[in-house]
Amino acid sequence: MKNFSLPVLKVILLVSALWLPCTAYAAKNILVFGDSLSAGYGIAAEKSWVHLMQLELEHTHPGFDIVNASISGETAFGGLQRIDKALQQHRPAIVIVELGANDGLRGYKTADIEANLGEIVKQAKRSRAKVLLIGMKLPPNYGKPYITEFENIYSRLASKHHVGLLPFLLEGVAPEEFQADNLHPTAQGQPRIMQNVMQKLEPLL
Image (cartoon, rainbow, N blue to C red; front, side, top):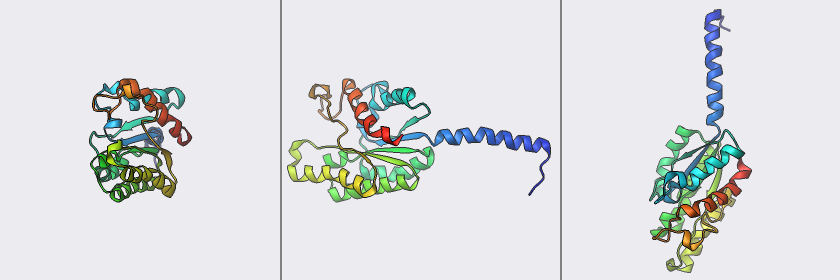
């Protein structure tokens, strides 16, 4: 064992004291990894459900910090290309995966969507993060067979990988609380979305 002089030992102890709180704080990051529904498309950032959830956590679970890595237009395949870097950069304790809607709207093969989402979940778990998988639904014009196949992706993955599941992000959002495209909720619909997510996130905190 090395013998350190008293000044050197003081420096080591000081660096250790400064480093430990930082690592503890980083371990409480919550990574929101989604598409435009989580990026706050068409509304002010402070009105989005992600921002509202950060305010909620400050009151109910101080110490958790949300990192929003959501990108409008993102697909499960695109997310798979980004997840490793995001995990290394933010070291989250919890990862909220909200992807797949754009894949479904473009009619991608459900097997490919499921494979890409499954790999994202596996990488998140491999980093020792807890995972909350958020499901989506498609408009009726996509046909019942495809819609059913798409919706079943999320429950299968949650069961297979033993992760938390919110079956439908937009559950309870009223028709009048959507923007003109009928896909993205307005600011008025964001509190309901936040409540949906918080209900399933709570057991993971």
